Image (cartoon, rainbow, N blue to C red; front, side, top):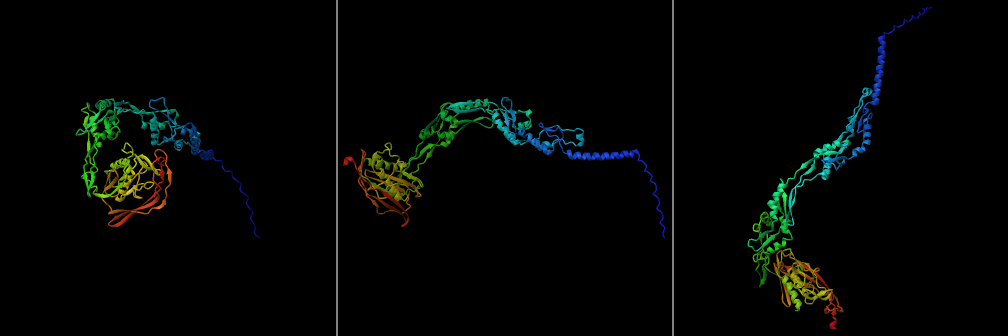
Length: 583
């Protein structure tokens, strides 16, 4: 049997020796350092990036705030200040203070840049009492907008320079005395405006001005008056044509209205004459017209089948483009003789002459038509006068000829007398009675010449001496007779009248071999009525049926029809009118 030895007893413990004193102090120091580090880290977490206490911007405290909180506070508390106008004064003017809108002037408080300037002390700085102070606001400026805003203020405040001037009124010299002016120095004022923005203590800021002297001074004004202005208004300027037949006198009142003295780049006053305005002046135009001689057109006639031209003469007129050059050199002279010069004239050729009528295509008779009428004193007078006014009409290619414009209003002053006309579908008396015979004759000459008929109107009821559907009447101011010369050459109108007929002939160049007329039957016949006339002016009227009729105008060239036009006319019945003294 095995024998287990006895377990030995535990040896006694010997106590460790006590550490020396320096080791104990080291252990305590390490623990303190660790606590300090932990405290510093904790303070940095709580206060890191904060703006130093006591930091202000325009009196707003942002100390101890984060950047974001500082920006929010400044934006909130300085909103009104940022929009407040900047007060300015101009130069030495102490009476007027002007406001400049900062937004219009491009001035802006940059809040973010302002906050970035602030100190942000660390923990030790805070522990030792490091603080902030007042920060200058950061201002952003758009210089061009500031210049524009200041220029607007300057418009109200500048004392504009007055240039010396000389002008003319009612034929007399008028002088404007020169004087210096002041102008805002915008370039220097821009920086001063920025510095005054958000700084109430610096407002109102006095902006600088500069002195502007006139270019045209007193000496120059005196010279201009003595050497030119006074002589110019000393009397009329007279222009005489080379042959002495025309003479035009221009008064100082007329000249002065178109005369000026204008400064050059150095301020010297030089005379300027508005020649165009002078020659168009309503006081001058009649003078030039009297000095002019109208050309005389040649007269055409037919000799057998040939066209013959005779007479005609050149005319003359004032060469208006040269008048200014003729007048201006005379203005600084004294005395009637010295102020007289040559009136520039130019030749005016007649529209129709012995030399050019064939070139215009006036080589043959195109058409001719005659209307006969019952002789009566008023008819002879009025028809003869209308033919006289129409005779010799020259109608150039594409021109429109007008009966009313050519003959004029049928008045006593124009050579017409009272006669029978058709008005309101009955005979009445009025100036120019019988002229419709000439209108009908012209219409038929137009018709057979083949020209374009622009305007015409038939009588309201049919008159037996005229072709059915191929007659015309006129009325001043309401109905005209017109044609366009679309022949490609000029047309010359011959018109003549005697005691019982009137003839109108068109001379030119034929486009067609023939222009024919075909008249259709009368249709839609309507019988007249019988009525009793009234008053002293009653004109008896024989009855005639009303009807419709169609006329064809047929154009023939080289033996073949090349065109056709239709003219439809409606005639009302001509009622019988019995006057009281005939019953």
